[in-house]
Amino acid sequence: MEWEWEWSYLIFSAIMLLPAFILFFSKKKTTKCSYKLPPGPPGLPIFGNMFQLGNEPYKKMACLKQQYGPVLWFKVGPSINIMVVQTVQVAAELFKNHDISFADRPIIDVDSAHNYYQGSLTLNRYGSLWRFQRRICTVEMFGHKKIIETVPVRRKCVDNM
Image (cartoon, rainbow, N blue to C red; front, side, top):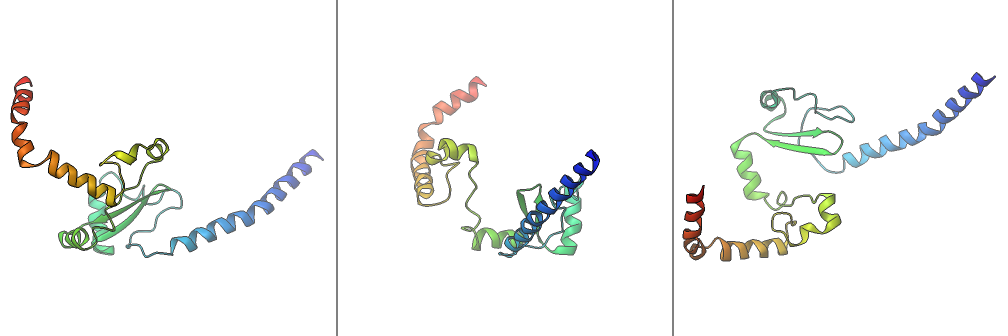
């Protein structure tokens, strides 16, 4: 009697969870196709292409270049996406014509929780504040006059090495 009772709970749980899984995976596929990604090999559901690259990923990517072209898209793990550019011509087009699209960087949750990214040139997102900070660094810190002024300090540091 007790055995039948456990089976009924198992069947009931499976029936209740089945629609949730169907909704979850069908929603994932519709959101995945909302924007066009570069071609790449199909990956496993959770691991992506992590195990397909092997011990020498550069050789595997060279083989995949023949099949998919000079731009590849890999999914490594559940949330890491990698775009691989394999020719100089495509890289030049990417950095000259589409530089603003790829200029931004993600902010890690720890940095956003403590607001560490808000005053930092290296951690800040691309925008007007970042451009202003970069201009100040270029003019005030890396200008010819400042470099000449810091020659004795740098020479002293080199001598102490």
